[in-house]
Amino acid sequence: MINENGKTGRKIGFLRSGVHPDHVLAYQKMLAKKGIGVFAVCEAVYEKKEYHDTIQVYCFEDWLRAKWGKIDISDLEQYQKKYAEYNLWEIYYTDRYMRYKYHYEDACKMMIGAFSFWEYTLRKSGADFIVSDCIIGAHNFIGMIVGQKRRVPYISIQGGRYKKYYSFFSLKEGYVDREYDAFAKKQEKLSDGEIQFVRKFIYDYINNNRHPEYIYADVNANKEWGKTIGYYLKRIKNVSYLWDRKFANKFDTKQYKGKWKTLEPAVETARRQMIKPYFEKPDNKEKYVLFPLHFQPEASTCVYARKYENQLYFIEQLSKSIPAGMVIYVKEHMVRQGHRPLSFYRRLKKYPNVKIIGPDISGSTLISHCEFVVCLTSTMGFEALMYGKPVFICGSCFFENFSGAQKIRDVFDEKEKFLTPPTQDRGLYIRQMAYYFRSLHLCTTQEQPMDDEDTQGLAKVREETVKALLNYIEQIH
Image 1 (cartoon, rainbow, N blue to C red):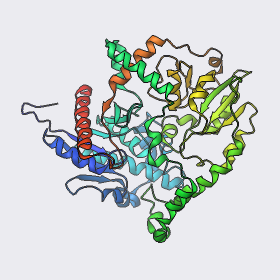
Image 2: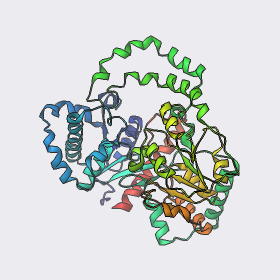
Image 3: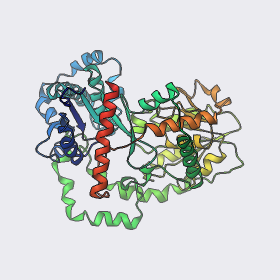
Image 4: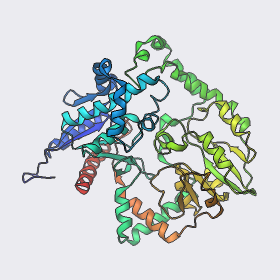
């Protein structure tokens, strides 16, 4: 990769869905010293305006506007044949913004436009790599598979379950930790310090009832009525935005038909009170299977558990499949409580072997007393393995091959597996955790500004991110 002058001549594209424009500018300056060019990819024109004028930006909305009238929906069949590894409708429905906004013809045009946009962008930019966080929707999903065809790797920087800015790198869909896989396959020697670190981490996690870092992000915070009223008072002077034409702009997939999303904080705050009667208290003497609900829509289900993203459907299948003598404790997610409609809880109440457990009940207590955990991709599965509990995984996640975990493709057809849950080899599990931590790096993509970091701390994270990224590029080439 590096020539005799220490230059690479390569180009890296950073996606706005995972990398804030401030980072792109900083990375451009650092990478220019190594002869590496930088460009940016975004979905909307308002995002394009965030970039410094020295950054080359490829904007999906601009592309759609220019090409929309010329797109023939019959071309979708040819794209399906060209990129046959995935069903294109499967990809379309991974997108939390597009999925229910467009009718058939416009949905087809969106997919065709995305493929043609990425083919043009990767060709025109001369890209060698594209970088973002994990695949979070159809836009970067399509970028990934077009990149595979053109041999332009999509590098995911996936948040680690350790500290705020610790992440691992991955190719393809973003849940496979390649460095971890390499360490585990070679059974690389671990130091006593690494083993002791894991043991202490697990001990602290269990005894201090810790939660993953993302739980504490402002975007995930639950709003009490006082905070909700304050939220609206700050925005009431801008109420005219409800008539803003941007909500009729079908080329901006994020904001199109999004006029009433501003009501979500109030609706969720009201629902928080209305859903409480549906919650039951856990009984530690009862034999139960623990299923943690996901916040939706999110990549954790739309992308990484595509078959079972309809969690009501999944719970119905699970209720028919668990051994008699057990019940299912469905644990509501602590993030954005009230985001689900009341009909969701009414439906769950109809299953006699299902109990809904409120978000305020300690996850660690529920894990401690359960028979086993069934999850899609939930971090609660990762936590349950620390307790030595069996975990059945029905999506795709980084810990799916850890000792004590078992992957299930279809809970109904494979129900016999629930009769003999996996047994954890504790020694193996400790080593796997040590390999996992070894694969984490102090780095971040961070879609939001890092305003809480001082100048020195911000510079360090950015420097370490570039260093880790270049090391990873050397490994995959």
